[in-house]
Image (tube, rainbow, N blue to C red):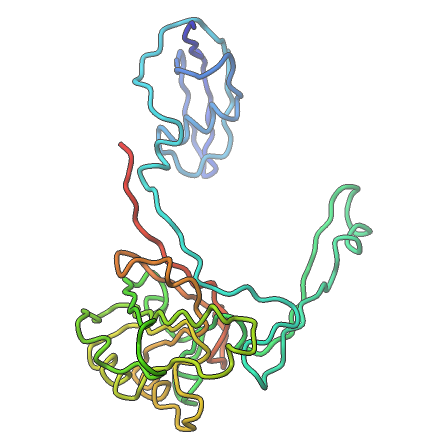
Length: 305
């Protein structure tokens, strides 16, 4: 097969004034053609140009000529930054119950696709949704304001406390009884990390079993996590506290120290013990301490060169 190259000139204008011209450029291409838009994108990316307003491709010709650059695999640039993202959140659906005694969310259209058609050109339509729910719905984060009136709310909790935290998973699936004590964390470096407690209780999600007899952390475990410098603590069960204890010691200790809590996680068994970054970021809302999050972990994987 004969190699193809494109020969072209270009004239480029910057959105903040000035311009750039080039004559007699030649570029290896796959196939028999390349669009002006793809050529313009190549110029911008290859020259690392900013604030480009317009690119005109001139005198374009496809010629038979041996390629001058070493071939590379398709999507090689993506492969070099290859990552694996693991979703750790439950799906929020109309009518689902997260916690007995709290109302289920109502998820519906404010404006449906069908209704919107009267406002736009033929073939153009949009949906605007409406949701009525309590903040403790699905997988959610607790910030200090959830427990303390003077504590940081969703808008005041720093992003570094919730995003891209180095994570560690503590497997507590074989713990005898419901209480998970401090000794389960003693062999792990917790400082500055998102500590995710894997109990596998999420297997009961959307069943009556989920609400009865869930695993929880002890007061001593919360104190240990605080003293060892944990940045965030999450669990895949109904509550990080024993719901039969009205003082809620785990919430009280962790949130008093500014350590966010993420409850109702799922899929923690898909994570390695460490080697990932954890994020659980809510909207930036004033005077609210809890809100659903799209909790997830980013795992680094082998790169291609």
